[in-house]
Length: 142
Image 1 (tube, rainbow, N blue to C red):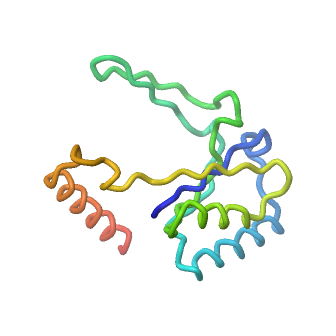
Image 2 (image 1 turned 45 degrees about the vertical axis):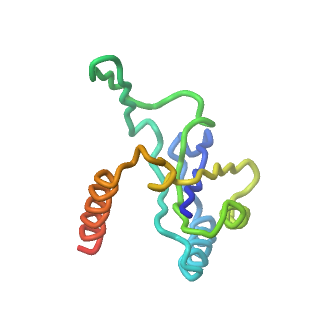
């Protein structure tokens, strides 16, 4: 099962505050543990929302673009990991080991798999999705 561990933003991360060398070292060691255990698929930190944009959809495909920064840093994300683990409990155990200080918050969400969509995800849609996933894998390899 794939799970996303979502790192919630803080006022400091939204200001563009950079982690210390010690924090980066601890995070690097944690990421090494994830890789050695064979559970890390992806993970990255994100720039502050001031460097982003929000696209809001309305009727008939009309969109509105709002430039950042966005209010309520506790609702924003500052980074993520995607893990491939056996259970939600295993994802939680990995989350508990993240080297965050006081006030750090992670949200854990299951990544929806094809079987989660039931009969609505037809064999044709599955085949198309598999082809797209193969193309993405090829691009990652170079």
